[in-house]
Length: 298
Image (cartoon, rainbow, N blue to C red; front, top):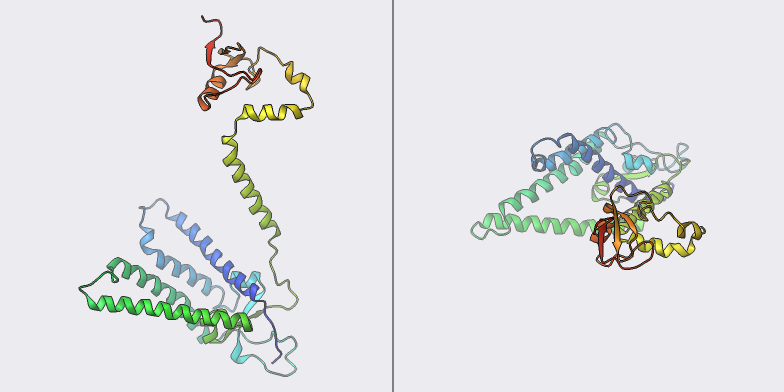
């Protein structure tokens, strides 16, 4: 057999993309039942996850097509037991038939059914409090068996991960047992997904969220005073219309004056500024405002 090396990163990325695809489908399906009784869908969450995983398996692996993540990473499942060893039909080492019917069925039972049974068993044991039951030795023993089984599965998964990192085959235990190996679907396609635009979008989203968090905490008048020395049109700003409000730059409908500097403001503008900070300073003369008064009143 021609030795081939399949990128381990591509295989991990394909599995991660499949998980994200399942999460997106679940989110859209949950929105359909958003007007129903709250908490009703939570009771059937394991069944919902199993149904979505079954749909992905039915329209991908069962019909000899790659899963969405494998398709993006140019990967497909190959029956390693029936892979060609030598001959004229072997050119790149990627040749070989897909999974057999028995392999597909066992893959569905072990992944979809296994995850469903594990989720249901965990929720049922937690609801029945098998771990806290002291008067029922049978439940206590069953809880111990479940914990030991989970520990054994994690240990075997870790050992399989070490073998995968060393040899690059079978990232999961199910794939190793079924001899279902991920190989490239086409040797001429791009084998990696470019995340350049996604990274830009993530950076911009984080930056915008940071601005939305910090901008309400900043004092607008202080920022204007800080940027005033760098302004090119200092004369125009200093010789502005004294009749206009220096905050909204419009003629006040209900004019109020700041004390003791006697500069005109809109009532809403000066009132909100004084309510936000107790040491508000006038936007024109930078003098501390101790009180406000309607213009013309004694």
